[in-house]
Image 1 (tube, rainbow, N blue to C red):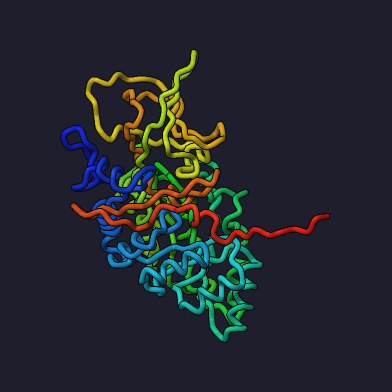
Image 2 (cartoon, rainbow, N blue to C red):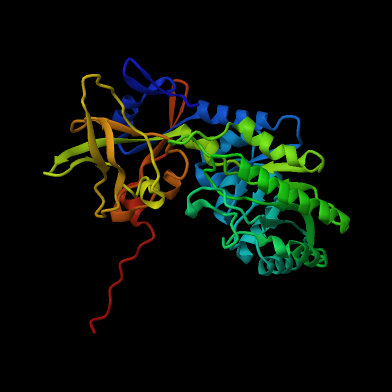
Length: 419
């Protein structure tokens, strides 16, 4: 559920007309609904009620400081994958003791920053990383709280680019080596073994893969206990999908699928939802520049582009595209919705049926809150869009649109010798 809806044929974000936002702030424009963000967090948190759990928002999905502050105020922890994301969390007022650091390529500097901040734990993804964390911790005179990320070797049935639980993925420790790595970690005095983690992928639309992963990690936890290794946390990752076109399970069904195999473990569960919290809480508003018709095709050329929303070309992702102002008399046409970037891959939809727009009409690309702005770039020297957070009748600018000076900041013009 989200709080983008039509009122008298005008699309609203909560109590604010989207067309008014476009006039005030220009296009392309990211618009987020605070009411939707709050509701999605509560629904996910409530789904795990009765269990000892911590929701750690996977902030790579949408990392604007105001969004992080909203979740932190609701008690959220955070799943981070870089030192930059750690700094964003600290800037937004997050509790470091609720931060989990994931990712396969942590540097010495990132490990040190995490230990200095006093985060909850570092998810370890390889043997070399285990040793590196121990070395950094030793230099700092600290014990590093670590959790081993297990690759459960299963197919979650999602796009290959966002599937992380299969055997040939770069993520996690293979099942066959888990106990070997825990034994090695226990022998390193600069490490504190606090958890076990797993994450099988993103945009998963069935509960069976979650249950299968939970069964596998429960068996590992029980085996570790017999070996004298008692853990505190079980990090189950995230991955629950949202309805782009699919009909994924509800958070309650997702929670039930995870909790059933884990009911007797008596560990604190860490859940890392990302897309499911923010995906449907954001839209990309864009304006039609031209309607181009050839002898074989109709193109709707908009001012948004692949540098604003990369998902359609990167993942072949589907996003619903709707008029900001509906016209009941508009015929349905079949068209490619494309941007102005000089790439054939710069498209938002191909052969899509939608009400025929005219030049200067506004379109809304729905479900754009996750992996939208965070993947934006200045390709073709285009400014990144502004971000707006709507809360009831109020619209807040939470990121200014890039200026040309923003685009070239850090670049130097050098005068080379004549050779």
